[in-house]
Image (cartoon, rainbow, N blue to C red; front, top):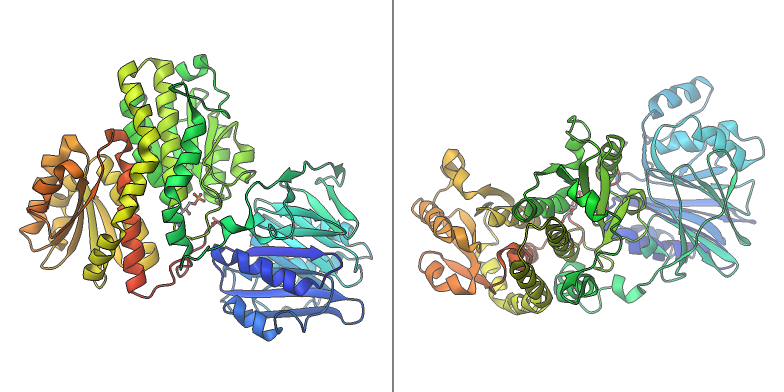
Length: 610
Ligand code: AGP
């Protein structure tokens, strides 16, 4: 979604803003812009529909926009089509106030009517212009005060970066339900919606809280709460470096991140296994509290939701506690059965997904204990959870998640195993077997990654299909959901995942000569049933690409058109292996089709609107 970068210091701002925006490109956007202030030239705004390269050309790499303070923005259109005029910054009628905004101002229509009635002319269709105009309307020589008055009137979610030509020594920032971080440097300060934008310049950051207002100057940053009382912010040091957020010789971030999975898994698993036991720092639940849990709700969106689907099978089997998995955008409106004995497991890579955050708050208000599994340290979901288990996958840039998904899976597995020990629902022998397999998982994933050529070959055979079905049972069904999402989001091929047993209840009518079916049959106890389903679709003309374990290769190869294998492991860990070929298949199909793999159309990395 939209991205914000701000800078005030002694350097030329525009190149810094462009560089920061470049690093936010992965979030998804359709236009870009910036406003820079210079004492001689005043407030200059440059903005354009399209890629950042258009803005860069327009400003000759920032050279034509002079000044040492400014704000920049990449816009993902919500109110008003992508166009030059709807791009941010939005500027007040006099041209003295410039605003960049992430989020949505929900009551913008009423505010617009009020301003129009008071003689204000609007030029864009955006909700953001209302903020710029309203600040000017209330401005009486004190930007902070005017912003404070505006905040009492606007409703919705917002992160704002604001410049005022009459107060050329400050950038003002505001946050509510949309992330913003502050960065500290020597005689300078930064503002960004995501650490990635400023990591090249500083590693010292603070995370703004909802309702806070920050005033950035060359001499430092002051932060106030909603009552305008000063707040002392904790400073954090970002512990990953710029290389982690760069392609490092790979053609795409997605491929790089797929290949990083063995390492990401090792970093996530190894520190949590000590002397054969799972150790979960970040978990505050006592054994008594764990024994008191009556039901578990897993709440998430997209791929994180699919992790929850795997979790349901594994946790219910391990714990004998009912587990419900709900898409976050549904959870908050469905009157869920939650009370003080409910554990809500909230899963999110970004930690900023608005639907997930809203569901978290709903679960909390109903009394649930909130435990989140999050990748981005210090993100909103992490900060609002009672317990956080981080996936140490490092920054994930490609819109299609891969290494974050894989690390979320193992964190949920380790949580399940830990609970099972406390509850006494797993034997020592079984527990130790899973621990042993967890420790070898990174190497087994590395083994799967050696099959890239073969998977690329299959992709070249099937990339021009219009429609693909992923079928499987139990954990293989949960994996099919993720395989299908991966394929459709980056290759734009229509695909659906079905529990194999459901095919005959309707979907099988869609199978005809040449339909591609990806059949997952890794789950040993149901392998024979998976084979029967393959025969059902084969006899109706489908091309079948099978995925199974090494031990079942031969048997499956007899009936399918192509087969990919994963090593044997404990059944509950099979999804960690089988997801890898599915990611690679989606990647190579998208590559064949010439798609923009890291930035698929209409999608954003971090979905911060409802
Ligand atoms: C997956 O490839 C996605 N692009 C998307 O479904 C993602 O998993 C979803 O938006 C949830 O994001 P989160 O994990 O950051 O909350």
